[in-house]
Image 1 (cartoon, rainbow, N blue to C red):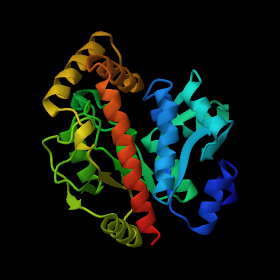
Image 2: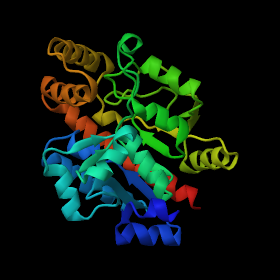
Image 3: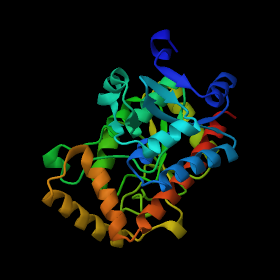
Image 4: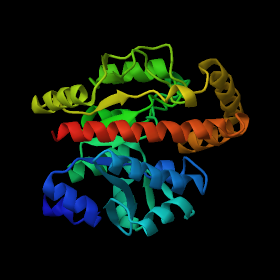
Length: 306
């Protein structure tokens, strides 16, 4: 890491020691804390995810921007700040330099967390679901920067597929065009966040952490730039039915359109409205899939260091 980069990064002692000693590390985002869940579920989720990763033998590194620095790992006070502060900016690639310059607090999206992880030398990242091509994206051109980041940044993203509010078919087509492998972890079907199915397949199915680690190692050793998606379905006992959640999403999308909600405000609105329409069950599913992704990501991170 060059001095020009290192001057913008700060590390917790735990993460710094893990990097220095070659221990497995799993990156975590902060947007899910600041924008994805209400308080206090968000801080409880953040603490539990870190504990799950440690239980699997890896070190958690929750990433966010504060005080003009990219924080690689957060202490308890900083975690609390991301869970309770208002406003917290939502940070993607385009916002990265501005947030560092302004000194504002910024919660990292999938794209921004991948950037932070890559700068720090972390290869595995656990999240809920990736962004993608929005419905009606063929006319709005609303395509998440998560996809372009996956095409260029060498970080593997363990997720429960793409958020089901998106156009999953077009999202997968975009990933194929940019050479991003979509690995189904113990599944032949691409999951759709709240549901285990989507109607779309994956590129390859792998069932063990060591298999995933071997593919990632070979990809990067060959100099094939870009990340990979490890699509890990929500556990069956916590999943919602695909047909049910699709109806709820359509209602929420119609309401967003009626209220002229656009851009980066769309996803938080939809997630909040879906929670209301499912009487809170969608939040329970969201939390369950994040925990499951953290466990699998830690196992893959450990296998990469084996």
